[in-house]
Image (tube, rainbow, N blue to C red):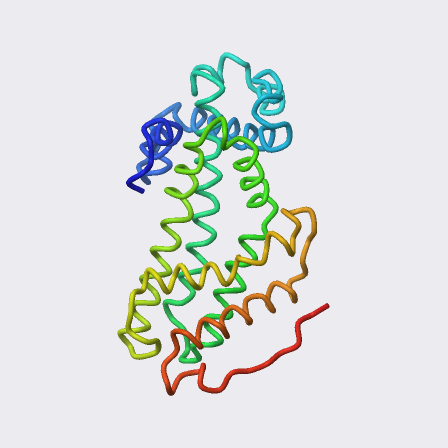
Length: 246
């Protein structure tokens, strides 16, 4: 993302260039260092999400990660850098899950509505994941103090997923399954239809919604999307009305 600040990138540059990220074999002794770093990042995210940045301490993170406090300093330097790196790592995890869902559009069996509902249900499930809610709550809590956290999340999760969805929709349009138009706008609209009601439904992650309700949200989103972007002979020509689970 072009708006990502140097501070936002700082937390993830080292991880991006690591042997684990590049696929290169880890040199002797490096595997343990990478594992320790990942353990610190995973623990730090849990502690920051639970306690908030101000109340979270490096002592608590070190104790829960079972590392010495100086090990955290050796890897990250300070608490702010650790926060950014932990959020970057969690954003990468969310991106991977969402990209895997979008990739299901690659080989659909010709039933466009069913394919979109399947992908939509997967994306809704990703959004409702407890770690996803923890990431958003942490962002909401700390964005005034660290506005660049939004750049990290959008640059490493939201934007790549929307771009991948736009690519899939563009290919469907080229194949004649959707109306030709701006695929980026179509992807943004579909994402908004899928996730727009979820904060209220889930009460910011404090209420678990059932898989049936998640799928109902996806079906309704796809119905609306196909009415806007479907072709005259496509699935939007025969809309379906389904009861929403209570």
